[in-house]
Length: 335
Image (cartoon, rainbow, N blue to C red):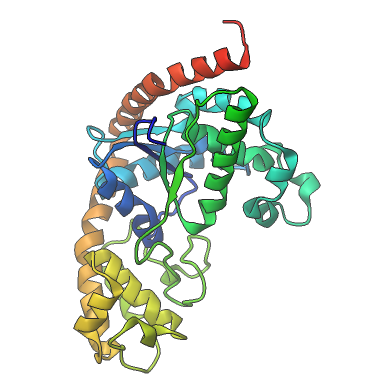
């Protein structure tokens, strides 16, 4: 790892409906990484089409995701921000990795099993090969660190396997084995209506989630009506065991306030939810409402978003193109 320049890569699918979970689990962490090392962030629209996407919706959702990145604090002057399909090197390297990875590796992926279900014969080839494209996304930049949620950790581990096999097969030390970065009190944000389920845009109840496009009134109302239990808040984390809704709200508060759960509970232990919810509501409105306002402004200016993504793609290609060309040389392709 030490032979490679430290570089962060991560991506999010433009599948629409950004939530507080996306902000706390990904975007807020991405912003915090700016300046620590080089940061490359991608809107992975080629991953999105592994299942059917309406073309107009995909364009809108790609711009909305870009607006979410920028409104959350991703600075295009500090980070490279682009959409995947504008950098052809991703797909080109993915084909090389399709020929390195084994079918058995792909079929063991938890997300393949979950998304394909029992009808694997009707799933797209792209859905099966998704992890090889994700490996290419990461390794075409020689990224060394990948911030991900728990559900994507297996894919980063597969990326390491692909890098290792490529290096072994061609007797080189060319690709790094990137490290998954999983941290934070609210890496996994749960539903406001059911603390045992992940907060999701697909939940039929809009009250189950805080959308990044929600205004201050909507945020406050959703927290006020969030499911809780009748007990007061405990003074230490052990007291949250068996209380998923309480744990979720405390985790959200901790993540928004940049505090540990223990520090939050030292401050609010003994308080009833009737006192804690207004505290959480004020904090969430303070942090999230300015983001939704800026997202709305950006979405009214799609040319501004598109220009940022084009510049980002040019910067990304400056890194990716030489790495792909060297890969071709290693493999033995005549250029």
